[in-house]
Image 1 (cartoon, helix red, strand yellow):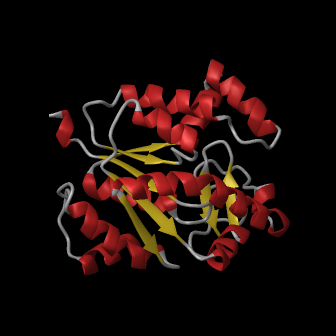
Image 2: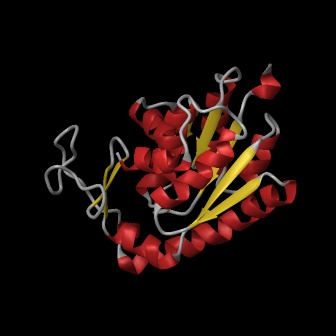
Length: 231
């Protein structure tokens, strides 16, 4: 029955490890991982109407407007009405959250609360492969060859807004936009916040909570969850 399907969201600022957490949840619990960034890149590559529109904003260094990203995500969710899913990067704003409300009821929202200094350190050493969205960190997830994407051999770049001067403003902007979304889900009693500086130390708590909502594909205790995350 549709009511038994899990609808979950992971919220977190840039550098919070949100993508890593989502990948672990998807792998461990069999949820479909739906990344707004990946869907935007796919639409841009396919030169769709939405992709062309989104690219104009991205090229100018602007955020993609609510109505564009909402159109992309809701159209994807319509195809997945019979699957468990996990949203990554959506909803970012109150407007997006309200649009999501119209098509589903969320069961769980996970918010990653990471100290500013940790975010700054991670993003200062973060490099990306723009066409695919693959992210590398020079400290804990470096590419095989410095400055080169592992899969394509193409060069990696550092985002302008990951550089120190722009970083504080970027994180402040995220916090301002995310607060109403977090408050909305907190008021509904579906928000769980996890604080820390290391994804591997946060993961067992996320694993334990999700296990109460949906059975893992391969049950493990908290210690095994940590070891699995480190592999």
